[in-house]
Each structure stands twice: as C-alpha cells, then as structure tokens.
Image (cartoon, rainbow, N blue to C red; front, side, top):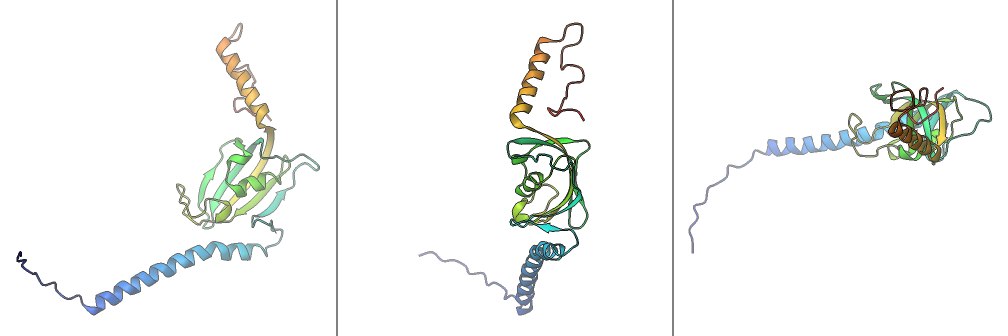
Length: 197
C-alpha cells in the first residue's frame, strides 16, 4: 500500500461559483438573442412595402423588373451578375467589381432561388435567412446564423453547356495560335465565358 500525501484544496468562495453561473446564463441568453435577431428582422421586413416572401422564406423586393417576358435562368445555367452582399448591420462582406459569372446551382440556396425568379436586366434586393444561406457555419467575414442582404442585377445568362463549349473553343484557339497574331483568344472573344454586353 502506498502512502500519498494529501494536499488539501482551498475551498472556493461561494460568490465565485455564483458569478460563474451568472456568466454562463448571460452567455446562453446572448446566444439566443443573437439567433433570434435575424428571425425578428425577417418578420418585420415581411411587412415592408413591396417585399415578397416566397414559400421557402426568401424575401425579395423588385428594384427593376427587367425585360418583360424574358426567360429566367435555371439550375443548368451560368448567370452573369453584379451583386453586393451585406450583413444586417450594413457591413459589406462581398461585392462584384464587374459582371461576375456564377453557376445558378453553385451558390447558396437563397441566392439560387432569387436568380431563378429574375429575367434579364432585373435588379432585386434579396434577404436570405440563415437556413437558405450558410446556416450556423461561419464563412470568412460572415458569422454563423447570419441573415444576408443582397442587391443583385442579372445582366445575362447562358446554359452551362454553351459556356463550356465556348471555353473549349477558346482553349483550342489558344493552343493553335492565330495566324498573323499572338497566340491566344480571338480578339473580342469573351474572356469570362459569357457574351460581352
């Protein structure tokens, strides 16, 4: 049998334990209120003039309706868009510097849903609740459970197969070179895979 020298622990003051529990309770309350902030905004925003709420909970407002009767993108299209994304506190987390090609099916569900409602030339303001955005996951400057606000302009769109074909043609042109000129894409050919405007 071994003998262990017992070192008595000093008792913890009761007030320290009370402060610890109060701190834990306040942290839980703050997390709950932060999660509810987006829900409260969406409920208030749904009553704003011109705001439409879809069955999924996406909210949007038409700023410019676009071309009447124009086709709308589908999941198999690549959309050319100008956009600015903000948090509810007004902080811009992303903004296109020029029209940007985006696969309609390759963005967060709320952004994709909005694109599929927009005809060419349309400008929408869109509010995406967390479940249609990044959910509880933190993505760079976007905290988890964030409601996102986007201004989106749909410049144009093409089927993904057409964009891939155009890219293959550009690659083939770049490999073979152009007679009387430098190797590369044909002058005036789009570099983004989307037609110039």
